Length: 575
Image 1 (cartoon, rainbow, N blue to C red):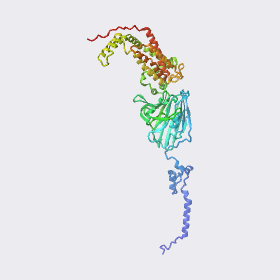
Image 2 (image 1 turned 90 degrees about the vertical axis):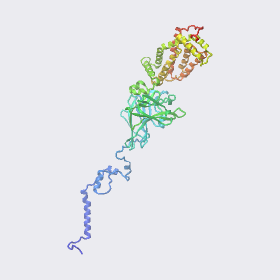
Image 3 (image 1 turned 135 degrees about the vertical axis):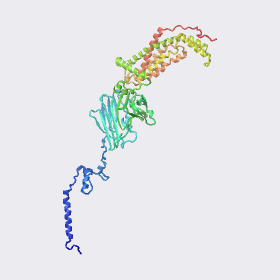
Image 4 (image 1 turned 180 degrees about the vertical axis):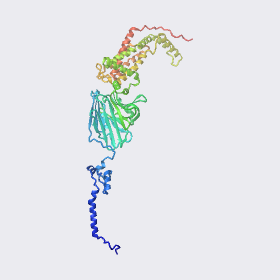
């Protein structure tokens, strides 16, 4: 029974019509109240505007803040870097870039951002070609200079094999390299000047924004590859400011693996006899040097040879001044006074360096030839030592005079053993005889002893001074090396002058058999000097000639008196 009999109930048909009318109103009227969100082509491409169906409010939120890509996103979306990641920087192919200055010709490769060639235009090697400081065998096997080694964790990509994007500077005197895979970023920049051996190097490596400490390496040797046994003259080196000394490492020091040291260094790097490649920190901070031993098969060698290498740095971001060039004292002092310490004068620095400065001054100011400069300086040294040599010659003459008396004393004690107390009496008589005649038994040794420091100083000067490299004198083409002729004349002349000098010099008290043995000494000296630098032979030869002249005038002015044969004991016999 209907509770409201006065009210007519709607039929099913009417209800359907009303429902359809309401649905139509919803479909056609709703767009006038809710604006549809427009999707840009960029959003459609990235998939960021593909919001799930929902209420109009949900669509508005999607337009204001696009959701992050999901696993179901398109492949393009999955490769896009996350928010804040560095953009990728990769080259499509390996290319070479050349830096050309007045002093260098350097070739860089964007594969690893390393140098593949470093030529010094102003210097020739033993083959007459410009000096190439980079070992091509090392580039092929280990990598070129400025490859990086990481102290602990490395980046996600091997940056030494990566293809960097290279950007040469407008003046063509610099180049920037950058590589990024979206996580790891490596940057290197090099700046050169037109006529300087000093350049600027900056590097930086990060992984997800975190700095990665690294070393810049130059491996496989350094310097003139055409010198005999180059491995024997190539070193890693650093100058320790706190200790105030130059430290040198050879390849053999790292035969069991790389050897590292760190401290406050004014520079660190590599050298050979006449050239250096060293990094100088922009500020006096801590540096690290790692020495390597690389075994390489080089052209002209039957078996692999050990070559020294160095890694310098230690921080994630590094800024260095880089000197690559000749160890020229004047040049080094002008560029940076710290670089003078690259030249190692050895133990006789107090004598060797002034000697070089004098040689250089005589050459520049007067003779314009290092050969004649060596001769003039040697003559000057002998003239300065003349008073001592003259005293020695006088002592030798007096010694020669009293030899019969000494022989008489020795004859009276000849049958005594060395432990016999009477031997003391013999020595007392001999010393009394020396004192009576004013003879100093060690006087003849003094000039020889004084010559030794000068000899070592000359040897060091000729070894480390690039100014004498390639210096000509008469038929000698390079004073820093032995003569480049089939039969070396200077050592032969030296042997002859040594014979003459020994024949002219008195040798009192020497047994005839000993005198014959001493005549073989010139041959030994000649053999030793035959393989030494021509400048060193010229120094000793000049000293011989000056000595012969001095001995000649001494013999003329101080003829040997007739010896007194009948002698009496100098000391009174004890009762």
